[in-house]
Structures are given as C-alpha cells and as structure tokens.
Length: 73
Image 1 (cartoon, one colour):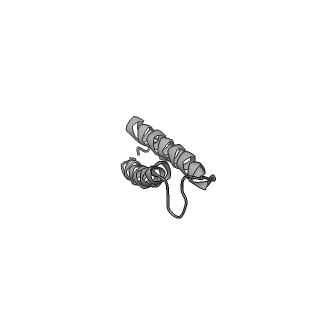
Image 2 (image 1 turned 90 degrees about the vertical axis):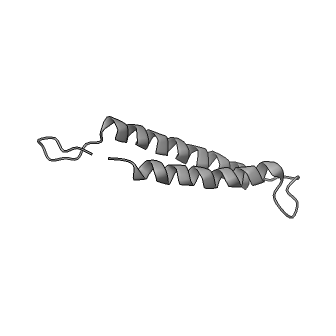
C-alpha cells in the first residue's frame, strides 16, 4: 500500500490485482460450498467423487485466497 498526501492508504496496482484474485477465490469457494450443500444420491454414507473433489477444491481455494491476501501491499 502507498500513502498519498492526504494520508489515506491506497492499494497499488498489484495490490488491487491480488484483491481481485482473492475475491475470485471467494466466489469459487461459495460455488463449491453450494454444490456440497445440495442433495446427492451418489454420496451415500460418504462423498461421491464429484463432491470429494469439491471439498478438496475448497481447501485449495482457501489457501490461494490466504496467499493472495497476504501479498497485498
């Protein structure tokens, strides 16, 4: 982040890109969570392959979001 003469912090162009990336991860997480919340006849006692993949992707997206947010300057 930079500070212009008015003293308010401003995001750099790279910071805005990281913030946009973090928002994209957040949107993807919401989509995958909605898929997991829906009924699935294939899941049975555990998760079907599709829903297991959704759960894995949520974890990966959360890590990506954290990484993107940690790089904002």
